[in-house]
Length: 160
Image (cartoon, rainbow, N blue to C red):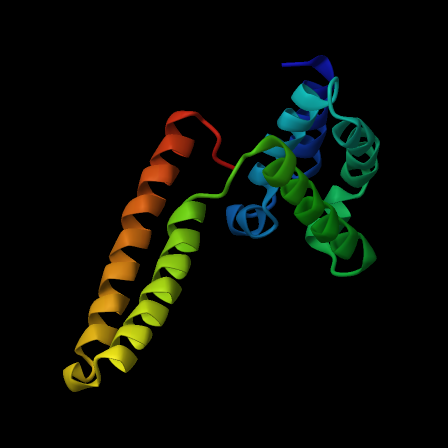
């Protein structure tokens, strides 16, 4: 870990000393610290991460105000952490827990419903049976494929 990252972590911990754990979780402080470490790691090869380092320095100057007092600094912090997480997800392939399970379940559910609807239109004598079977098969297929992909992400250590 780089010296810059350690300094940032120390400043964050010192400024947020005495804040309730509930507030720290609500404002995603641990996620922010993990993304600071990732930004430092990728800043040599990624120009966006390199420019984010200066924004991180500006954000941590007002992080205690952002957590304690509603207002402009809180909105800036919230927007920045969302933008930083989005960049880390899109460019560096770190994903939140169960990302692919939710995504593939939705896709499988939609595909199963469409297939079941078309099947029930082709075979109207079956009634709702084909539609229900399409729904169940699509949902289960999405769950299985998504869980498998999430397991791969977890074993590679690519969780957000």
